[in-house]
Length: 267
Ligand code: MF3
Ligand code: CO
Image (tube, rainbow, N blue to C red; front, side, top):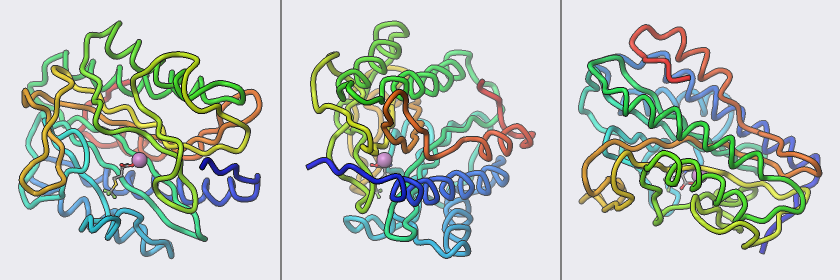
């Protein structure tokens, strides 16, 4: 069942979603070779708690951390680890915030400066662009498949990347995962109709090589089968009459990325 949220509910989801962006930005400022993803996780978790909110992911279906941090061939749901980051690493930070009874969910992929092939920079750029192409379709009267198609067309058809099939975007609100599912692949004009008040998390997970993935032995971390890098960007978005309202924001994250001398700029 799809929930249609009132303007007041949407403002509460926006509050949660904006806090996610600020929490990720605070961790972004710490990224450099030598720091561990466990330290980045601690930063995000402390930030969320200090702002009177709760990390949505911790204990969700027994997931043990406040964030998913997925490095290089890890696609999503990466466990934070005590392994130090290195030059050239691709680091995706995904977090959720629960505040005032509503969740917000957002993710961003960073690239540490290093001897990085242009192909990896382009993967991040195209994945981020595909998120906005999907968002453009999130308006009253379109269907979920319109979003899916826009993302798949650009990433797979036009750029030859692998679109992960096993994991999808989702409705979000009182629960972290609600109906409808929002795949990053599919046919135009199919799937659930989007109406004013539908709130969804759109989250392309795009692989440089094969679309195929496997689960790591930790039971959560999803990795590319060919061990090539993967990128993940996610916004929480409200469907409105004539266009999508992006409830999360990359503004703080992009400012922190720009200010961090260890990070490659991808836009
Ligand atoms: N953004 C991810 C998703 O929507 C969140 C990870 S779920 C958790 O699937 F289980 F790790 F919390
Ligand atoms: Co999500």
